Structure formats: C-alpha cells, structure tokens
Image (cartoon, rainbow, N blue to C red; front, side, top):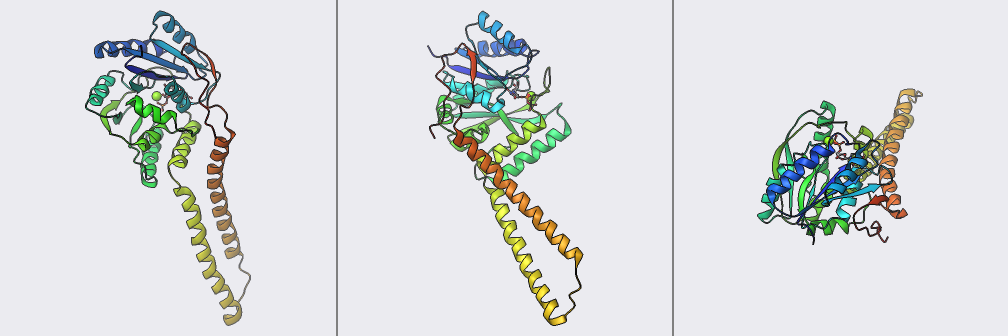
Length: 318
Ligand code: UDP
Ligand code: MG
C-alpha cells in the first residue's frame, strides 16, 4: 500500500542532525495520523550519515534510503527522491532543521484546502552570514525581474506538493535543476505559509559559494534569456557609440585637420570593446555549456545502494 505522505530529505554530512530530525519528523507524522515514508537521499556524505540512515532503516520500515555513488548536489538529491516517492503528498525538507518539521502540519492542512503546492516562505532568517542573506535577497529579486515565470521570493525548497506536481517534475528532462522555478512554472493552485527560518542545528553548510553561484546561474539560465538580450543590447549600444566616434574621427581628419595621435581614446575603446565582447561570450558560454550538458544525456545521478524499488535513473530520451 502506498503511503499518503512522502518526505524527501537530502543529506550531505548531516550526522549530527539525522536522529534529531528523524525524531521530530516522526512526531509530526504521528500528529497528522497519516501513513508515511521518509526518503533519505545520501548525497555522497563524507561523514557517518549513511551508517546512521541505515540504522534507522533497519529499525523502521518507513525509512527508505537512496545512497549516491558520490556528491551530485542538493537539487539532484531532491530529484532522485522525487523519482522514487509513492505518496500522495510529497514534502521536501532540509536535514539541518532550518526548516522546522512541525511546520509540515500547517503545510498539510493548507493543502487540504485544495492547493497542489504549499511552499514555506521565510519571514525571517537568523544565523546566516550577512553576505549570504544579501546575495540571496538580490538573487531572488533580480530573478523575479528578468523572468516571466513567477518564482516566489524568499522561498527555498521546503514545501509540500501533490503527486500531480511530482509527476510533472519527473517529466521535465532538464538536467540543471532549479526545482522551485520548475514548480512555479508548472502552475496549478499554489500558496504559501510563512515561518521564521531557524539556524542550522549542527554541522556546517554544504552550500559553498561556488555551489551557490552555480545554482543561481542554473536558475537564471533555466528561466530567463535576459542575459543573452543584454549581450545583444550592449552590442547595439556600443556599435552606436562607435559610429558617432567614427563620424568625429572623419570630421577631425578632413575638416579640422587636427589628427594628433590619441593614445587615450584608442586604449579606452580597445579595453571597453574587449570587455563587452568577453562578457557577451561568457554569457553565451553559460547557455552553451548547459545545452551540451543536456545533450550528453548522461544519467542525472548514480545510485550505489538503496532499499527502494529502483527503476534505472530516468534519463531523458533526447
Ligand atoms: N545538501 C545536499 N548536497 C549538497 C549540499 C547540501 O544534499 O551538495 C543538503 C544538506 O544536507 C541539507 C540541504 O541540502 O539537507 C540544504 O543544504 P545546506 O543546509 O547545507 O544549505 P544552506 O541551508 O546553508 O543553504
Ligand atoms: Mg541549511
């Protein structure tokens, strides 16, 4: 029999949080009184997380695990979970207790009012670095401005959604996952519940700035062509200016005849044009690298061992 609720928990070096999380989640599920399963996706942890998850799985048949062959990244870990859920309502939650498990009760209740997605929107965030808060804030606002999909601001992946939405996600073949964007893109009735985001309970963030930048670029390139347009526009703008300068140069040469060799103007235009060109090529490169990544058609992740029924990883057919 399929459970009513599936909870997906991506795990990267969370040994200090796993038992605590499990206890709190179990408490929440008992309050709700529905059947459930937990799907722990171990994303190449280097600590003892896997052993702890397997211990839980032995004790409790509701605990499922998927163990990756290496670290594939948070979004892919969640996607692997989504590929293997059986529930009617699917929850995505971080393992570090920054997403309070108790909020699932509110999310679930709200869903009963007839929503396909209820996401948890952060009212406050504590215990994160100033730089992280600022970059996150900017990122969500810039993204909101340059995309036609309405991606909610100040919202992570902590949410509940119906199996209908999960089915849509499973059928989206793109490899550079930006799940919160894909879910917004899917449409249906969506709403949110507000909460205060807590500090990470134990351990350290698995999101290095490098991973954050890649994630941000995935979000932008998957949901906006605006950077490409900026490249084109700056090309036009610079060409316009160059044309005016050309007129001026001809004028000085043939009319006023004062063509003193101008080092400053030469070097400035060379540097400026060089800069614009490099930026534009870089932007195009970001899109092309994602195209080639999709075309290669490698599996999205590799499972080393698991106690769920696996079909082979869903590889897009093109
Ligand atoms: N995580 C993961 N793979 C990674 C990095 C993180 O599965 O490469 C998991 C991590 O264990 C946690 C969730 O994703 O459950 C969110 O990560 P984290 O708390 O480190 O990110 P932050 O909250 O600092 O943005
Ligand atoms: Mg966290």
